[in-house]
Image (cartoon, rainbow, N blue to C red; front, side, top):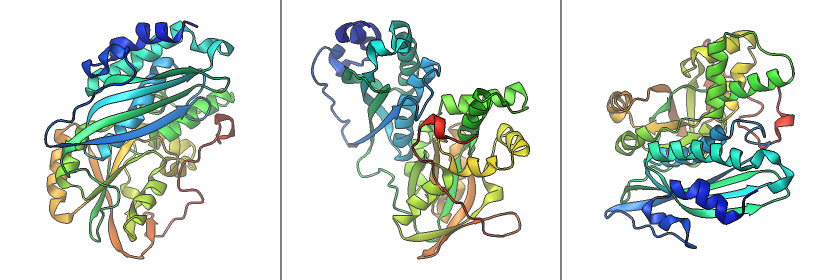
Length: 338
């Protein structure tokens, strides 16, 4: 492998903004925009846990940054800059050679450019373990306007953006392929599901609408059921969710028709990177109007209930459904079910 400085100069310095000082210094200088707070988040993804070792490197680069931008979006923040740490397997893994790094940097850079989030620093190290990619992303919100996770109140309406479950089902499609038991789906539908797993779409366009209208929000990274419970637990509130209203893509519905158990996968599997929000009733009409104007659909799926109440998930007949596992659990790819 090229030496560390060569890797940085060749693949990552071209992604650096002026605040990154060309990635030749030991630190970057970031000055917040006057009247704004700086919002920081960090997420790591690990080979064999969050992605397959042989996934296309450009999609791995996109995903590494995308999962962090998703957190910023849910806080109502505009992306500003990010730090990157790469723990590379070195010569023990030929997949991380210079060609791999070039493709990884291209995927990372494309999302960085389209989101206005420049690379300003980081670190590159060798490891005898798996490939680990850690990003710390920084964004800005007007002072005091960050949308917190724990601000929901009784009576608020619960919304999700986009569609739920595509990525989790897409992973199951990939696992079925690897086990020589592919699902009998149309090529365009399976491609949609796999793409949603490989290339998350952070909802940065919703940041302003969330700041204006939402009382609480978080991104759905570990599964709709579990993440909703996390958000409401901070306020000690319950909710009633109508499962029939949870938005599913055409591709997800086709997969669920083949494998009805995939409906639970969709609700609990994670990797959606959609936004979950609690919106006061008096602001709901404006929220529903503004979000499509930013190119993202939002769907009302339920309502926040009184303190101490359970979070109920009701089917089409009004019967409460239970889930043995509400969220994605971090495990190796080989342990995931098909």
